[in-house]
Image (tube, rainbow, N blue to C red; front, side, top):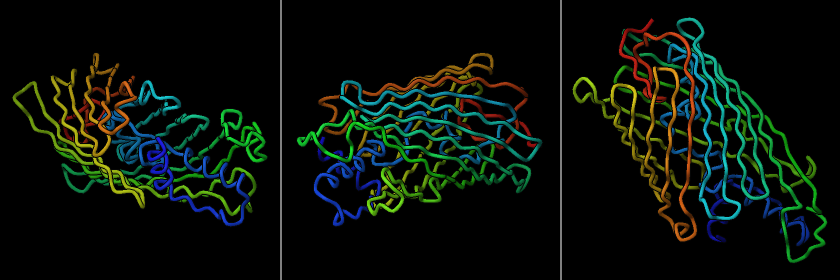
Length: 336
């Protein structure tokens, strides 16, 4: 696990002035830096069902579908590994008129003695490029909070004056920018979360050991292939990059039947493989499940990862053209 945790620190681009600290304090802060983020070589939480949670990876999706939707996702990663990540997300989106969309989400991500909580609201404007293609442009703003529970951290020196069994936290502003180019048969989206690159201080604002929330870069794309009247197959890809870690790719294929049932499989480079299944009841209730099989050395200790998605869609039943395929919906008719 030491190698894995060292990799986490590289992902977070920690900028610590350790030369100005004593040994005890340096040890505590380095430990905090290692666990501020998640164990996926990214600072932000990861989901296998990204096609059902497309808003979280490209917030310009808000307003691209003609109904209000609310969805929650629960992820229990690396079952059997002590202090492994546990993630909960709740999001909602809605169109506003013919060309705008509003959305928002909250999430909490637990890793060992740390907890990250975030919330954002977003606004999207959809520009009609022609009869079939629209460009969505989204901005979002919010807050992130980071907590470390010192009572759950043990060092060889039990008299470490820094952690001293306290609950320490930091609250910082956050923002993201996103674009979505969408057509009835394909979609391409990009998003830059943690746009502000806020700094986290667990002790005081003048502390030179503050960590920086690195800017992330997400890209997603997909295409719909019709297989007769009832079936459709959708290959898609999600790319995640944060300096200095090499980019990660989620390569996914989803088979859909009558817009009601879907089966999918994902390969995540240097991480895991996942299988997914979902059902959309009467165009209103959705449920999805994903199981990840770790492909790294952690598979010796992990019993896999479980992820459950629940959703409710309310509103217009005749969907618009140029809607991205995620969330189990693929509207075929004309855009407003």
